[in-house]
Image 1 (cartoon, rainbow over the protein chains, first blue to last red):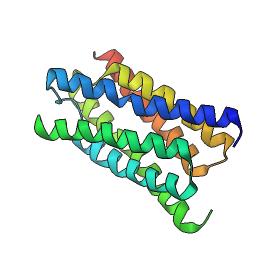
Image 2 (image 1 turned 45 degrees about the vertical axis):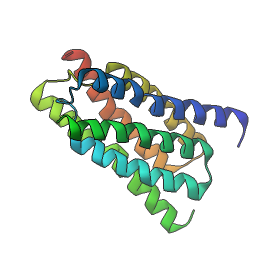
Image 3 (image 1 turned 60 degrees about the horizontal axis):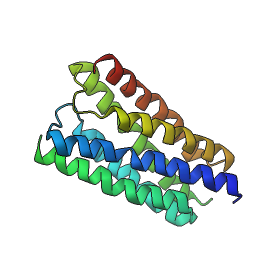
Length: 85
Length: 85
């Protein structure tokens, strides 16, 4: 895989992965999850899990890193949604 | 790419893509986006755009379909967040 493609993959990974941090922080501060959809995060986490498996099968590093970390942050948001419905 | 891997990719694509539908519907019904993070969706959409480019470069069909559709739904949520802050 050439350099440009890996760079795009890593930037994409950072973008989609890091994006869950401000959402987790906002919920942590406000304890407000009212407008957040529980089914979104249940479905999203199942999908991310499958992307992780897909990335492992294809040995695609950006995908493995992105989906591994996204799983953690999306999991935190799901935890807050269940704790503060 | 063998059948199992493509199936996992497509299921992953459906999971992460379709997950934005319940969130968009919830906002459409309630017009409430208070607990949703604007910076999450700005960052997430930039990342999804890059994943789309990455998928096109790698000619990876599940990635192209997933990120193309996710872009639409995440874009709808961003539109609602801006319209009903």
